[in-house]
Image 1: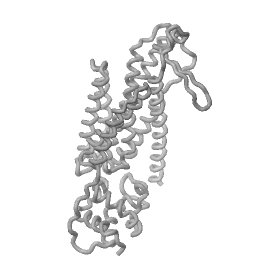
Image 2: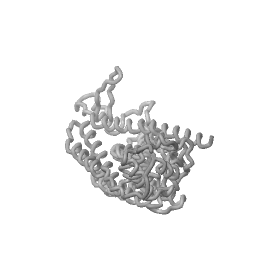
Image 3: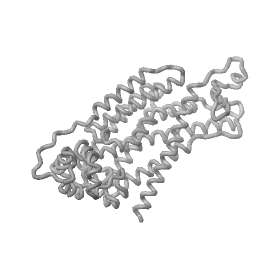
Image 4: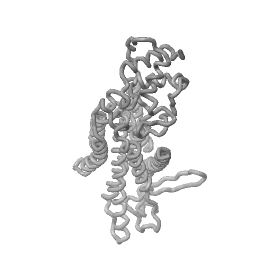
Length: 399
């Protein structure tokens, strides 16, 4: 019953995380589009006299909308203001809760890979926490430095540091945990931008107006800069959220470089759309993204190692014995592996039929990527991998 409750809790937290993430990313995409699509009013128009710097007309859901943006603020603060912050906070809180439930509470099975580094649970969790907090501190210091006026330079430096973080984490954790912690580091930066910069800046602007003072335009400039940074972070972090389904990326010997290429492609795709909103066809960005993803496709293509000769007859019974010793701790209806409460991907390998039906999946994970068993926690040997590969290569016979 306890395992079931943990499973349900994880499901609900993941659902909340996805919903909140959609809302946050959607608002980010919308407001960047809005900013880039505004038209300046005529110089002598009523809008210009009110301090409006840009406006547009839109139609959606059968209604007409006329959003307007002020250069600094309206002359009179309206009674009701809509704030956009809880999407960010809820996404980060639910994501961190999921990180704790899935990874930190099961660090030895979900984070530590002895073939990469032997770590205690406190060490693994401490490194994960430090990667999140440290990423924000370094990023924020860069954005507050004299470089703050040079967004292109900041972008290159931050991209380089994120790549370095990915390199370090893939030399510390198993591939899936390394990717997830790069993602949580980016997510922490994004949420901290909202919590420490964007919302406080907006609150100061509102307070100044209520006190009859002119808001400091620097607050708006800083908030806009961090908001745009968050916009460019979105596609890389969304890929990381789904990356544990694609072993060819995180199990690659150079997984950090694969992540850097995919992250770079995500940034270039956002560049294309953000430029498109301003009326430019930024085709070089699309070409660049396609090239990076093409490199990923070729670089992660499976290079199946030759299967060495195996001593003795390779039968289903022999394979079933190996699978029973090395795989069914997870892939059964009642898993006994710490942190696993349901068979991953619904794959059950406790019967001959289940093994035969999933033979190609087993071959891919056990022989091609060698990512399973997770962290080789069940100590499968190379000879046992070869037996399974030989059996599948022979057509997975039932005798």
